[in-house]
Length: 234
Image (cartoon, rainbow, N blue to C red):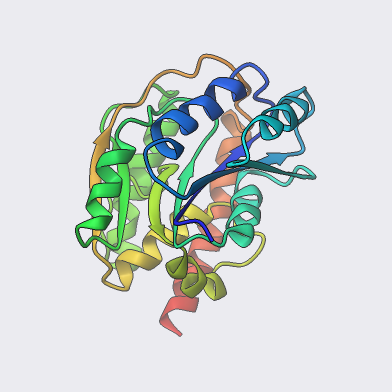
């Protein structure tokens, strides 16, 4: 059993996936003994899957699972279900957040924090995504009585045991399991270190949710969030 699993969903990232894996190898696997990378290929239609198979053959610390396309949330849940490590780190494959700060997150949990989250104070994302992040930040105190600056950030380090405790409250079809997990941790009083990280513009790959599709996605996710609140209270 490894001490740390890095879980990275990937969808149509043929232009970035080699560099994304190399960054994890250099910033995490080479620095934290007994750490591994699991990439979840979420039904990519380009050569992402083939590239990942090549990379897996070159490094026994890297593995890949290929699944039909089900969305980012589905890919995260698949990766978390396969992890057997003590700690889990979630990161996206688009390379928008550098991995050097992972050392700071790792130090935080080694010094007593139950989890450590990256915080994007400045984001190179379309305006609608920034607005949605602010909306989530303002809604969480009203809905759950908790405060998190960047609850849905795909840059989270936590104990796998915490995920197993939260899992009964997070259905298989949850669109934003990372957000729900963050809310669960804060509502249960866990100590979460929030650490500023850089956020850069996407250079390659495909943004799978845009404009009205993103708004519809958020509407469904908000309904799931209300169901999640009822489940926590019961």
